[in-house]
Image 1 (spheres, each protein chain N blue to C red):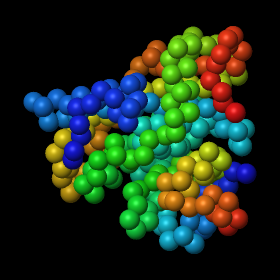
Image 2 (image 1 turned 90 degrees about the vertical axis):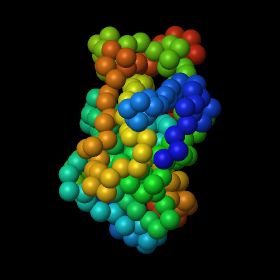
Image 3 (image 1 turned 90 degrees about the horizontal axis):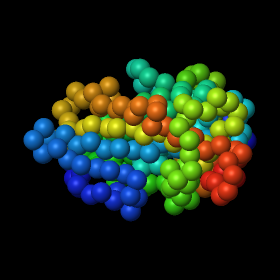
Image 4 (image 1 turned 180 degrees about the vertical axis):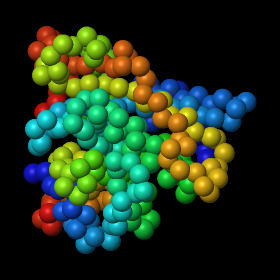
Length: 73
Length: 168
């Protein structure tokens, strides 16, 4: 199931991942202590629908259990 | 930054890296695999395999443009933190296998008249970065990321005969 960016932002916060809007561009940025930045497609702002493959890649990057993350969406 | 002049980045021979010592710039070619979204109709998912960065767009070209922007952000951010972007974990081997298949069987994307037949597309990004640390004020827009010419973009078609990339 895809999810809106605002849902991903809320769920990521539970894992201490901060998602911020940059001053320009179509990607927001997700950061967690000790991890590299991962960009989020946000061409429609917080309403952007995010594809399943992206969610899987996001979870893998931050070392999250995808099922656990999806329960929070 | 510790970029190595290695023609087989992460064991992937499709990636060419060379370092221009005179200008102190490194040029890196990155593979971007674009597939239709399986969960959102009309969206295309772009996966930069070298950096394992996924993004999406409203069309194949939009997805490639989105990948270009995401790559610029990632490369700039890594360099600003003293990290080598090429040390990010690359995509899984099956993704690279798809790339090899598309190279082997794909058609020029520009030659495909019906986008509905496209099951996957392959584009390349050329990234030029300084081999020395970036100044503090560096921003993503200062990282040069170019899309290689559209004529170089390849497409795998759904009704291509013979073996073709498995996209399931």
